[in-house]
Image (cartoon, rainbow, N blue to C red; front, top):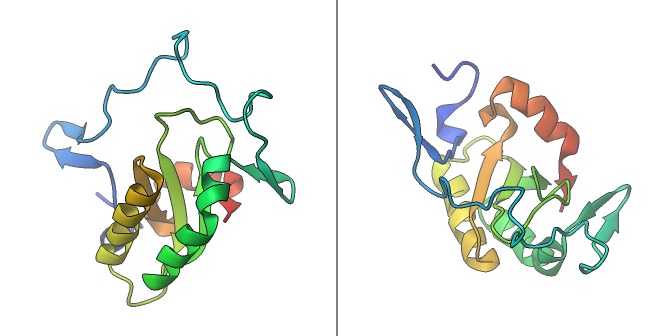
Length: 151
């Protein structure tokens, strides 16, 4: 069922059930794209300017907490912390989660990934997913690695 993914390195927000997968957090809570009350995105020129990292950018939320996030990851033995998803594309809004892609050296457990997720959620005050490349579904892995921005 997991293919080439290592189940000890996967922290997912979905619970497998006999009928498929059921989301247990955040399901149906995001505004629709056509909702006029939707918060402005970071790529909106009226928002704070994001910091340039090479040819990629990070939203102000991550710029502000960059050092603390790296310290949390280092404390758990995780390296090469990268952001992917809407945050990496600067296509996020106030309800967006933060998706972190990390390298986990041998001996790292799911508790380390879960611990970083919990610590980062407390720091950023929004949902945080922490995954390794091996944990990602293969078609999604290519896109995530391609769009990932290093902290």
